[in-house]
Length: 108
Length: 407
Image (cartoon, rainbow over all chains, first blue to last red):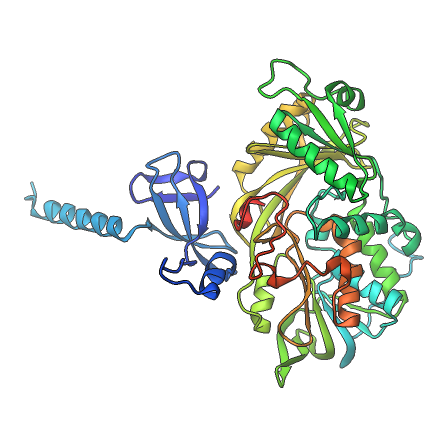
């Protein structure tokens, strides 16, 4: 059983998530009309035996899309974070704030 | 007692320094390729290199179903050719591969599915491939112990049968090809891992292996599951392939219970089952659904496949599972394979078999041997190329688009 540590919900079982795709495949911008660029983004995959960056959807949880680093040989999950940079930023800001509050609180 | 009085079915030679052709991968596809190179093209100075033991990968890890009920150009002629080779394979190899044409029953549950299957049936008939369309009563007569309850979530409406389809004994196929190829002069070299490629003037002229360098003018790669890893070593670049794992299950042996192959795909349910000659119920369903090179499955698919089984065959409810395994599939971007030359001179590729490699073994070996021997594809595999995506002519049987996990 894979278990993903969702940054929004905590550690949850594989059942709650849907695998989406290889997160390293970046689509070109819409202005880019090169056939080669689109062909490579849509059809070609590195398909590594080792660490793979991928998107998972927490479909039966917070419904956020997560960026996961997982080893395709051992299934060891080394990193789970929000896929969108703005959410990653927000989460780290909240984290930082929480830590400050904790530190600021006087010890009894 | 012990294993005495036997002679090995194939020779176990030391690798020579040079061959005419090297085939990488000792699964069914590689073995069949080596056999047809020697048998049909007179190329007997062939080495087949296998990292582990022959037939130890997906050739020994499948649900042994053989059929040709395809309807997209590129697949139709290829799989029908393969099925025809199956029909005479035991005679051809002088080895009983236990090919049993017990029929393949594809169930449908909704009018939409029925129409899609009728379209497939019509196209198959136009292509000269056999098929029969059954209504609910005829299905009930053919397999009386399915779930025919009117109360079930999706009652069975009918089925689509390919009578010439069936199952075969997977190990026998590997051993039969190995014995026949070896007798024709092919060197089958086991425990010989390819670790690199030797290039000269833009051409691949040999391989580095765990047993030293071996050279050849032509090198064929048939390593489905690990294609991307080996292709990267050869400098073939990223391919339109992802490696996914597919599980299969075998129950404890029971008395004769099912004399055909029963299959269905309905929404997210996907299930196929047959009974082996030893009596075990052999079945499987969907991929685990995420990229993997680990030959072990995950629990959610157990639940899915078990519930699919109970949906159509509630009588299986008290059967115990004997074993379970997973194999690594080359899932291609359109669900169809590659038997092709590559842009590296001297390197030929046989890959992308998705779920369907076992049935393709004879046809695949036959076409790959032709492609290597003549340095150009046979008409039958002329569409199964790597450049079909760039040319916008995907062979997408299921219509799922460029999402390997969905095929």
